[in-house]
Each structure stands twice: as C-alpha cells, then as structure tokens.
Length: 286
Image 1 (tube, rainbow, N blue to C red):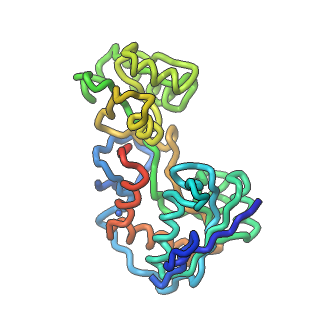
Image 2 (spheres, rainbow, N blue to C red):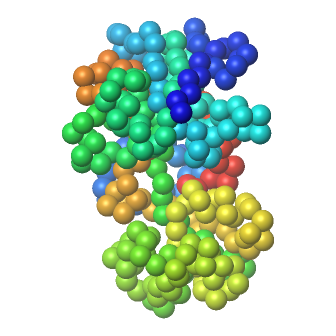
C-alpha cells in the first residue's frame, strides 16, 4: 500500500511545505580511521554557490520500516532521520515537498517509473544502479568499529598487537575486513551478531568488531548492560562497508541533483545536519 505524506511548515499533519551540519574529506576507496564524533563528508575547502535554478517541488520516495531512518512513532506519525533530512533540504532549497512511502524493494522501480523525484532511503550506489540513476554526495557512511569492555586498557594501539582476540559475525564483511587488513588479530567467529557481542560482554574476547551504527544502539541499550565502549577510530573502506548513503535521482534530473548536493552541503555548514545526527544517533558511531 502506498501512502503519501505532505510536509508543511504549519506542522499540522506530517508535512512540511517550505518557503523556508568533525571534519572528514570527501570519501574514496582507501582505508582510513576517523576520530570525530560528528561526521562531515564535505570538503571544507570547496566552495559551492547556490544553483541558478532549484526545483519548485520535490517528491521524495522512502520507506517507513527502518528506524531510526524512517518509521512510525507511537501515534503512527512518520518520522526519522531521512524524513527530517528531506524536510530540512526542502526548507533550505525553498521547495515545496512531499514524501511518498513504498516498500524498500519497490523504490528503484518507482523512481524509474516517475512516481517520485528522488529516493532518500539509503539506496546503495551499486554499479548497476549507477548506470540507471545519478546519486548525490554521501550524507552518511556506516563505518566498522571496535568495541571493548569498559575496563579494557589496551586502547586502539593494543588492538593492533598480534594475538588480540576479536569477536566477529561469521562470514560478515567485518570478518573479511579484519582478515585482509589486520591479519595479526585472532578472529573468533560466531554464528550471529548477538553471540559475537555477548562474547565481548562476558569477557570471552578482548574486543568485538562490527557495524558502528548498530553497535551505537547496542552500547546504549539494556542488552549490553553498560559493559562496553567504542575504541577511537571508525574504519571506512568502500569494498567492505559501501560508499555511503546517498539520494538517488533520475539521470536526466541534473538540476535536482545539483540542488540536493548544494542543500546537503549547506545543512552541514549551518549546523542543521549536526543537530539531526545527534537527535537520531545519540551515541555517535564516528
């Protein structure tokens, strides 16, 4: 079932109609470690002027079942990081906007069929989709992160010593990354993420390596029992962790693409992006 929500500054419904954010360089495919709490995916040395033309109206496509990006709250109101990011972009561009909800697997086809103007749902920029659509600069990336027990005193340098036992999910991209990039650590592979994390919580291993975003919620949740903490240094490499979350548009929509890239950069410069990131990711995974 397709649901259409209109956004309005009056905030009477779910909507916003507009009349009316650490430093990280633009990503590449190399492995890197980043220490800032709030990511910045825009090169601070680059300048971007407001486009001569911006769209009067943007119809976003997204899903509603992937918290904290897009989900229904207890009153069935659509909310989430993607919803608020779309709203902020429309305010910055002074564009009238709507958001159409569809199942995630139907979003690419819906965009191609002209059922909306842009997909904001973490649609991956795969080689196949890159031939079909254009993508904005990344507005978020999902790094690999190490976590250790609170009492662990090795720190980042300690995890680089040969013999450190690190739990990972069996067959995961995080296991593959460590096997290829940090061969001196001792991998302890578990059938599920929950088992790999429990091995750390119980003290069976010295560290765990996994998806930073989901780990941030585990660290703040009841299951972890406050056992653990991030080790400084998020790890990014496209081949293992993807090239980031981006907004997809049809290839012929060059005006919209330029406007969205400008809007994303301005939201970072004005601190709006920072506020949204802190709102939905209270324990930063960067």
